[in-house]
Image 1 (tube, rainbow, N blue to C red):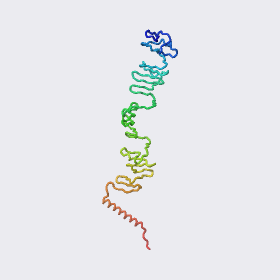
Image 2: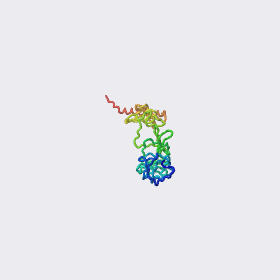
Image 3: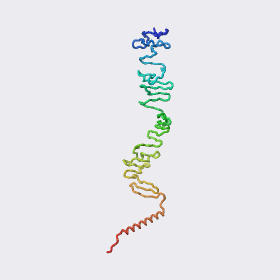
Image 4: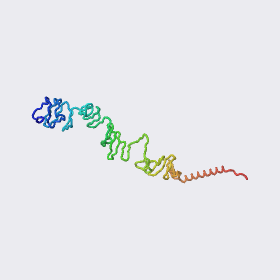
Amino acid sequence: MTWPPADLPIDFENATPQENTHPDAHNATNQTINADLVPEIKRVGALADTIGLYLPLSGGTLTGDLQVDGQIKSTGGGSKADPAFQIGPDKALGMFGNINSQWIRFTTDGEYRFQIGTEKSIAYGDLQVVGTVEPGKGNQTSPAIAFGGTSSGFYLTSPANAVATTVNGAYRHIVYEDRTRVAGYLQVDGQTKAPNGTKTAPAYSFTSDPDTGIYLYSAGITSITCAGKNIANFGSDGVSFPEGLATITGTAANLHIGANGQIRRITDVAKAPTTADVSRLESVIETLTARIEELEARLKPAATDA
């Protein structure tokens, strides 16, 4: 006959071991129901003719895969030392949850390791990722990667796709593909090492005038370039002017120095020389000439009689 009979009540409380001949029943050893488990088996609902698996209420072991077309529900959330869903014989390894707070935690060795909640997930301890972490873009007041739940962290700008740093909701610097932009003052505790640069593209320049600035001319020589022209070189031997006439402007005059280092001329920048100025200069020259002649006469040896 078929097992179990569909038209007869089944009394599992008083059942005795017998051969299980149902084709869907699973007992790899001897096709019989273990006598120790039979008293604990309870009938729940109607048993169809194709059911061949019976488990005791107090526990049991299933050898093989278990396919469930429906939900598996745990009546309790468990704890980190005794998780509701246990992996292996060690009770300190598994998963448990909190129904009221709506979170699930994973535990190993009886300690919290990871929590998945309705608003965020929390990793307890170090987090090592083998692969790519892809957060959202975020913004300067709510960065994609934040520290301690604050508005300080990193976010992706749009549409430039550059990475920006924000502190207290205000961006501090943005890293583009070809440059880094700093908002506010830049303080460096140590050396700032820039590339050598050239006279047309100096290492230190300006956004509105990129070919004007400072660069390294050669070892030990720093140069100033203006509009792509090498104006002055500063080295251990002094200052030189490689590309033509240089002008040094003072309070009342312009000092013009040639490429060979010779002083060319000094001109009054306040006003052009007047006739009176020329007369005064001539008078000074005449006075100096007379004084020179007088000194020469005094220094000339006295004539001796023949």
